[in-house]
Length: 336
Image 1 (cartoon, helix red, strand yellow):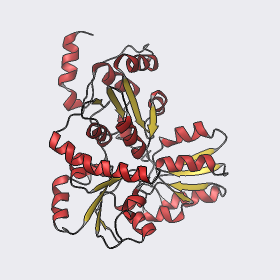
Image 2 (cartoon, one colour; image 1 turned 30 degrees about the vertical axis):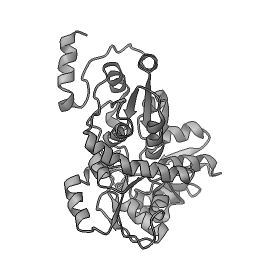
Image 3 (cartoon, helix red, strand yellow; image 1 turned 120 degrees about the horizontal axis):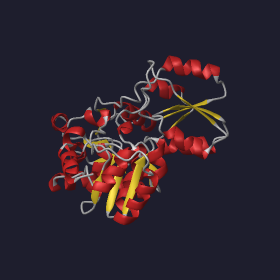
Image 4 (cartoon, rainbow, N blue to C red; image 1 turned 90 degrees about the vertical axis):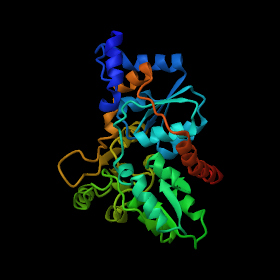
């Protein structure tokens, strides 16, 4: 490849989201990525919702809490974040001196997009006596307006760290917020945001599936809507669902979250059956289209040419870091 082709691809990254460069189809991408890890002292962090090939080449696979903890602790010079944009932002917030790259800048998040910082700032100003707990699935701008961040793994503990009489705004996920209200007895004020994947599950189809598989347990992520959570046998974070599927004696599970986690479930328990919960239409809408923008080819290219890179205004980074640090402190104290 000549320099002109590379320069053109780099110039178009903001528009395309990734380096649009043709690769030799015979290239062993797994071997090439391993080579680049050593050459560049790079670590590949991947979310459970990534495609199986990316999960298999990652140094660490996890949910939002685990990925934030790994990003904080890494000694690598370059963090390659196979996830969505807010996750790579979080890694940069925690590691300002490290290079953070992402396979595709366009890998956004419907939940994060549902909470624009300018609108949320006005909402917060209407409730000056409230503390703000924000789910990590949000932009750096929302984190900067928050008192503490949470994930689905630690949301209950984070909320309960405040006095019972402390008014709280919970953003941006109304479904997770409603679930935490239910399990804590709080009455948090909820921002009206949601994840497009976790709102698409069909109660009617899941009920029919449970009739066809009477021994199957329904396990659900708390981002799902309340009717799904009401009939679930177990509710937990992505890591929580994975651990439950490994330790519970049941051999069949209906899984109400993004389908990427099925890869790890099947690897960990090959003798068990995992059925993706059906959406309320005929498309594969329980695949996150943002997560699935990343590919092994894009992962290799962003490592080789160290772009697209995540950069951030220092004032914003520092403001966003404070509530993340608070979350990590509370989680560590709780043994998470």
